[in-house]
Length: 488
Image (cartoon, rainbow, N blue to C red):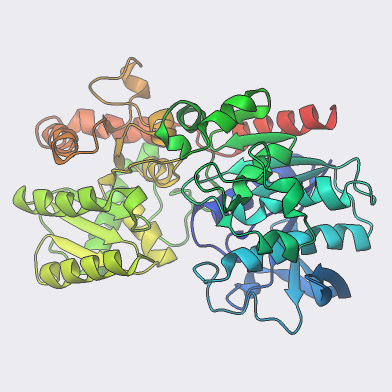
């Protein structure tokens, strides 16, 4: 089966968050199953091209309609871990030469152009994959363009799947974005098509992807239920109910070639569930790396993008609560929101000289691996969480997650005290209310077990380490989805 993944990200080439890990992990696992996978990406100036093997230009002239003119592009190709990668590079335009992936005022225009360019590449190179798998709002126009413009130009047999990683970003845009890529707003600006349910002046690109795709999924079963039945649907609840026949949730995996403490080259000492005492060496290395004293207290960690979704107010409260409990905390993360960035910069200045807290306001891949390997507990107090990968990674590395019961966190973390699962399947602590009291209750229970019943705490670590969070089962589910849509 020929599967083309279209995304704004793919680790390790271009990664801003979990989407990049998803595309890399699923693509790699599908290739291991014998599928032919191509990943289509913009050619960013920040792309880590040293990770790409045999990079070369394969199509020097790709002509893409843009308003009343055309933009010439080139296409480059390479390979990473057996996965073919194609880069689309618009010539004479700086769309993807901005020193970052997202956060530009013209993001909608940039990714609308990329969406049209992907389909033009498939048409002009006469490549028609069996499955075109699109991701998030940045590629939401591709199913629309396929149906409205390209379906009868040589891509009629192609089937489109659309995965929603975060409904907090839906691509709400004004009509000129549609005209830019050759779409007719008069046909599409209706409630059963692209019209945004919250503002009838705007088109909703994610909504377009949902309406025009053959199958749509979120990245966990719990989140799929939440977006249909609660305010987590962020205005699209009725749309998901309308298209329930082609909608579901598939839990993400983690790439165990990258996230595996038994062979991770980025940590000082490798370890596994049968050699758990070796984790202590990594704990000491983490303290040395961030300048924390060696004391008999647990290390809590936060490895996260810093925004409202991630519960930044609760993270800030946890820092102060854990300081009062004489615990240590290491935070690795950064914020795009200037107000949040300033808030955590002040907090860093307040805590830099403390014996219990270190904030690293950046993203550092090597430090992330060391934090997972060295910390005892990982905090994820998200207001909503489509899937979450850090709780799975933490468990793999013998750290106990403390999470809010939402989305994929609820699907993967089973409370040590209150789960209906047997103890061997319990692996963390869960709280319900996004309040300081709810968070403190979970932290106190986790600390109580660590201090008074270390053997039970050790077993929670081992339970998490032995859980299969790999891409094997999710890849089976996606192959079933692909087979289903090909039969339509």
